[in-house]
Image (cartoon, rainbow, N blue to C red; front, side, top):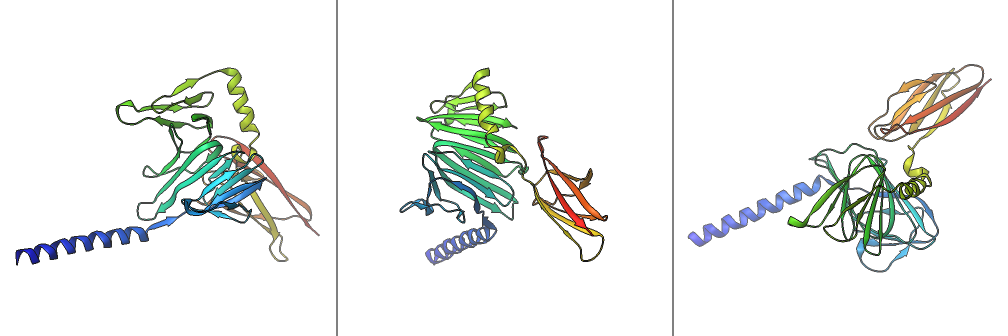
Length: 296
């Protein structure tokens, strides 16, 4: 009798755990990245298994996919929240996890860079429960609202920051070291448990030049279109920037939604109407475009 009751209890507990896991899984959404741009040759291994196949401009990247760029290949990935990641030539990257927990309102993004160089732009302010991490053979970089670069060459990790800060961790247990990497510094992790901070002016100038060659990473995203509303003297300007960016149109502030979208209604005059749209990100970097509409 006792054995039967015990078995019933154990089975009930197992059922409760299984149901809890199933319920939790219903709240977890996998986040896909769109291949925003592709130059040269790049390959993808779906699910981390099987053969590598050529990556195309129309592809989407998901959790467990592995991307490899060749000596002429560059790939830029973009997520729905505006996060961008660009792979330089001769790079190998695994998307270990890219998910959103609706119940906890927490995002988890983990990448594994085994070789090569990546540039990352993440402007969205993450919740305290969210994570964005780049793992390398010798270190782990954790960020919030940062523009930075991670490079792995001959097993050594390099981290440089353009805007914001990166928390770099190397090693485990008592031998673990953590340093905060700021702009104008270069962090090196030659081996597990080792972090060196360099402030060489010449090396920093080289790194800033590298960042300057990545305009899609260091500058805010901004796109817009304009159309006349019927036969009226009103125009509708619809556009997209990034979450947290500030938008002005002809000097007037415009509300930006959580997904970066914005909407503006303007009054038209006869002749050619010009609208200057300026986007400013959280670090003060700006970009602008001009839209025109002629009214007879």
